[in-house]
Length: 291
Image 1 (cartoon, one colour):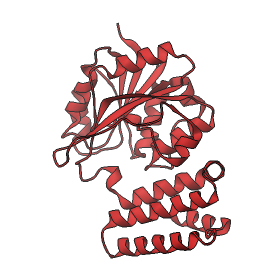
Image 2: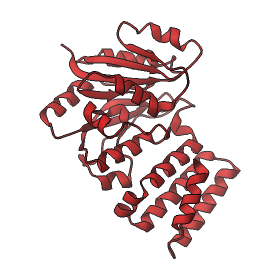
Image 3: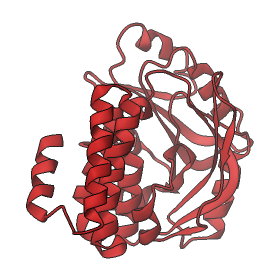
Image 4: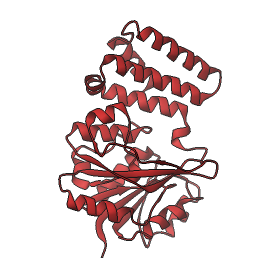
């Protein structure tokens, strides 16, 4: 008998590896009630490719590309189950992933979301496990760092809908923003320190590889929730984080512009130690520029 879970998979041009992804769902020791695949206007032969999975999944075809945030929302809003589990179309689950999380949520009715440890893998990198995170995330924890990776999440469908799902305007760093908004909304987020998810990191076009997307995503989250972040971080640390994201984007850019970003961030950090450099007006101007 299937457990009361809907699996949501946004799909965009992952034909080369998607068979491994869907197989990892079908091989779960506890089967989900439904699998929903949202084809985010991939084009090419994507519709024909996905049709082979029509007997085991509901496939939603979008006419235009809306990004991972809205694709997840569309799938989640169609879901019929008590819980949602999210998986990206190039990643994989360990066989017991759904069973462990489902039992945890059923045994802890006060918990809205549970995420797990992750294993980064790929042909061009050595496997790395991330499982050292707070067991009960606070809003302050999330202000300091984006802890939740939604490929590892199972959560109450009611909680997802109550806070409004992912912000469609944020196509990068959407996990961080949504996790923070859940915390602000009073949702409880727990962690299981077992690596139950494999996250692929060698595809050249992975979202995390875009320095522009990285910078825009992080700054949008910080500007959107700046009052909460300033409250938990303090103004100095808040500004330091802004400058650090500019610096890291420079390292990712790897060209002359990247060097300029790094130099600018380091200079401003040095000045920031002497004075609170970034005032509200300049923050608002920067926000308008990245939108």
